[in-house]
Image (cartoon, helix red, strand yellow):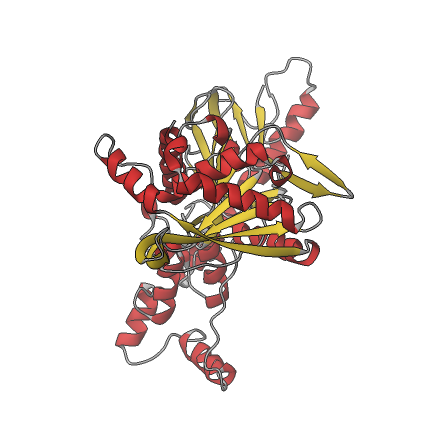
Length: 443
């Protein structure tokens, strides 16, 4: 009996997913716990592992298809098993001869229809196409959803392109190159070599561009990925509903610089300054539980777990993996887990549990030379901390002398519905205290 594989819920806010890549081909062996399909969700591209053994007898959702949670995307059964609904069981002794005859006629009609479809496809290819624009069909062209949409809009046939992405997948850059002629299909290159443009493609396209070009020049449109759309929606909702304010505070990091120098002598790579900020925030969140909460529909939610998210930019999207129970972890544990999570985000291998359950977020743009900045709270969290660049700045010591000190600027963005000014200031002051006397962070 075949088992339906449905679109899984891979994040707490996921409503639908897009099939990016079938790792197992139709007819291939499937094992429990091994990768089956790569899916684009609202948070990241994630690999879904099979929860049963068997053979992938039918792929229902093709690469590029978007389906809601719970919809059937494939079926797993025994070797040689036919997908339900394709054919009947001709050997069933309880079936009447007339029924078998009807099934035989139906099968014959279906075979003729398939033969006609095949001939039509061959004719289409003879005319220069594959009958589907390379989006779907028997060849299963590997292409990202963005590349498929661009190909349809720009009249580029995916089946005639060579992908430069992982595993030969066609990506946006390949479609753009083909549209410009650098990676164009063979028929377009031949037409160009003959001194002319392919009929109904290049010439009308150039004409349309000329018409559309105005004072701003030609317009290039980029479709948002599912992750980008979700981030845009959530950030817009946060900005529209949360009455936020920002507190800025300079922190002397001289002792942290010295601590890191000493840690590098015993551990390489040593914890980063951002790791130290995450650990200081985790400790301070335990002491200030309201900052580790959320405002929801006229009430406060205070969480017992301190889960600090770290904002990571990857593939034109913002992903926030979470260090769970950060207040219970040592500085070294936080550093190692942070490196692992950041690597998974950039490799597209982050898993649903690793991006869920955050109660507070740290965002760092200091590596780009940004002195300080504000950001949008990750809903429904009560606050977010931003980290500016570490720079040597003049400071006055206890003796009244001006001396150079390593400093950063921290900014705490708060939801005023749950955190008042004094609440935010007390929390930020505690974070500064921990960073200016960081030995406690290393314990």
